[in-house]
Image (cartoon, rainbow, N blue to C red; front, side):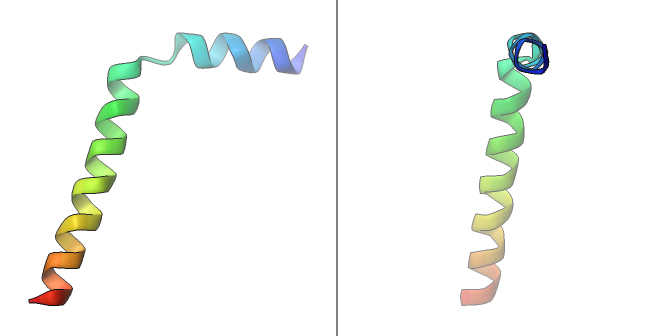
Length: 38
């Protein structure tokens, strides 16, 4: 039951939202690296 619930939850999660979160995290890490190097 738990596995099926997780699968349905993942399938309902918008891929655009996940992509936005991943892009935001990568952008934040890049900005931090640039600030540290500068």
